[in-house]
Length: 564
Image (cartoon, rainbow, N blue to C red):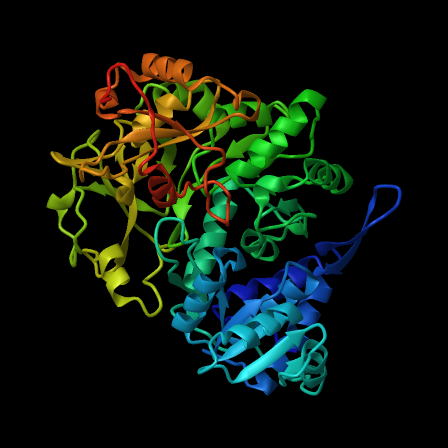
């Protein structure tokens, strides 16, 4: 089958890797746990992944899934998931990927918005689709991975058989600007939105990640976030799919992660801050060591310095924990590693200066502009704020996506037409640039609290509260009282061993930590929450809207210097 040489397609990297390292394992999948505690894995080599994805691609095209066809993909991480994903890219279809954990109602809304024409899913996903009527008006082609019941369409085995009938199949002649995928945001800071990725966006991301972190063919990756694993074949890495519930990374079994790292000699690991917190709390008392790990990449939210410190003790001194900054709409934007954080920036974060996310990556132009909730149609240099002043972060570069599918209003609010006609993305984050050009994150623009005398962003004050030994994390929200007034309070989630802490004593100690901060007097007191609501994707972004509802009407423990 023709590899599609010369075609601009994210899947075009796979045939090249299959030629360069045909017998190198591309993916290991955990089939079962054995009685002795070991795990049996199945695998595809690079040549097998190339062959299987070509078979499936030819079959999908014969079944009507071809260039430009929006196709829901609901298949659990597996060998089939990778082969299907690359097959969809190869035919030029547009995979639509939504986190199932966002909830049935939101999932239905996302799929209705994407207006998919095809649905590729496991049996369970098809059952849900039929019962709940997902995208009923637009779906034309169905593929079932596993047993097919009463809904018609093709099974994956039938798709492969169709592909075998077309040995002369060639990869679709996709262009750099063609839609490659629609990836929905986690919905942690507003409704989930479908981000349109082009093949050029994907290829730029692969190049940026390869160059930033010096990732080389032959490395072994343990990706605890499935979408990140899709970069592995393009980077020449072997993927070891971990044994875990991908919708609950904070609840991953550390022992199974450690076993996989040691069994395969894992060199690269991707993990959310919540997963690294769980993992490092397990490794520390056992003095676990992972000498093969060269790097850990963690994204989704700022990683607390305590987590970086604990996790680093399990690594070789030359290894690095990288914390890239970005978003579904643009990634990576900036990057920093744990040694710089622990040696230089963590102390400033503890003083309420924000969280340093590092230098912008070489392919990104980053600006900080004055804060506004209004659309900005066209870039103007006078939008910029001076160095050191807090504003909204705006980026431009090849990894920046062009807009949201079916969301023209959201696109207008998030994008600016650049001076050369390029699309710039408003990150929705506020922060500043320091004198050395480093980026400091100071919170989400939408998390400002509106008081009678203006809006206030309290994120830097939260960073101070987070230094308390009993506090796992904190969030300052503004519940509306019965008199209509907004009264900011800090809600804290305590460390597991501190959950019986006396609220009055805690309030005194938190006030002592933060009283010197200029915003401290604006916060009235403390509430203790049993377990913060967080995003499903990384288990790290705090659901502040839900916390605000929870706090409304509750009695808080007042600060000595705050409002009673």
